[in-house]
Length: 497
Image (cartoon, rainbow, N blue to C red; front, side, top):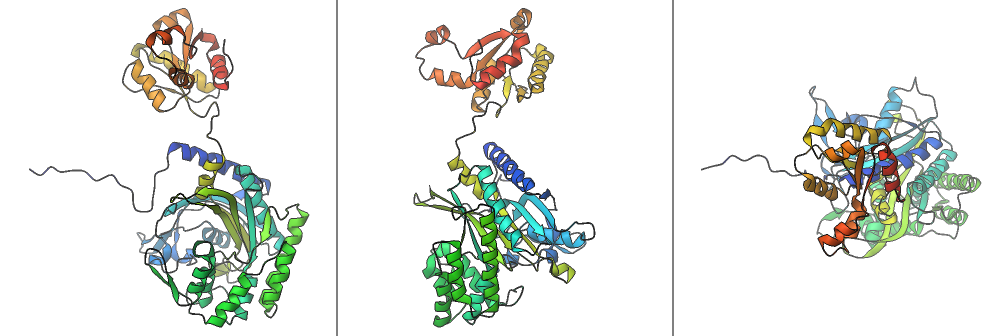
């Protein structure tokens, strides 16, 4: 006999569920980061998860991905729409649509999920959160320098200590100058047919594939460990050598790097302009007190998105971590951005300068789990009011709302089961306290409060029931009128007696 079954519970490939502790960590981190954005004068904005496909444009790094790397479909009017792949392209649409009402320079921040139809992997998902800030209508390098400062301050606010990160800065104009010197054509604004984009994306993979891998991607192509082959840019050996010389430009300071870059691109007007902008950014960073310990110039920073037109930057964490294979490595990039002066131009037909950056929320969360101790704040989990007697539920309701009214998270047990099951429920949820109040307590005007966290610790040393009965500091009885005061003392760790 065939038995009809329901659907198999499963997640779509590349997606995940987020457990409560990670949701809470994300909320705290986002609140800290956004407080810095507001301090810098940015205001919040929300745009839809879905945009028209032509409004988003095709700017993703993986141009060979199916459907251009986006989740796209036709809506009920047969128009193509797509889930946003970042928060910047929707911002450009918003600015173009509301330019008459916006006060420029327009400074906004936004937090939310974005979606990319890319190959999933360890730590790489198709839905992830970004935390952006942008300035639209400001062409000065001062705006780019300020973005780098905001990134650094935001990381510190989130919990990354100074010295645990570095903001790396480059300029696409300087890089384009290097491409010109190598005889690689670079079209303004870029396109899927522009060979320079293939070169830029090859360089952008330096951290993952190394210099040898980049050389292969600049040439015929590269096969990865899985056997997948990525077609290269098809440059000649002399063109590759010219680009590699640019990539190896270095110096002991930001000023030294500018000098080295200038030597590599001085034959290109575009390249010289890029180096000049870097020098201006250096002056602004220095004036703000941001030294080499927080921001450096790095010719290897490219940023894969095609819409960048000038300064680009990444914030990388510098401490060591252990990967899935047990190997030690630096954590790497958690944020990035740059200048994109042509993105709004797609809608208005004229340039509207813009710059900004985005923090990868999930990447930064992963780092914070290793940097910060678990949250042990007193009010992070609710106090449980147990239900000893179903007939007394209105009294328990009074108790739980009295606790909540004092600003302490609390919940009333509404499930089924006796006292032992309720304590087991609290234990499995790692709740700090349980309020116990039966008819005897109500008649005597008292409540019992059990310290569940302390009780778990004490139970490790208790050998039998008799010793548990003789010594029970994990549970006290207090006057009903002192319920909230006693709970606050117990949560703070002080002696409630």
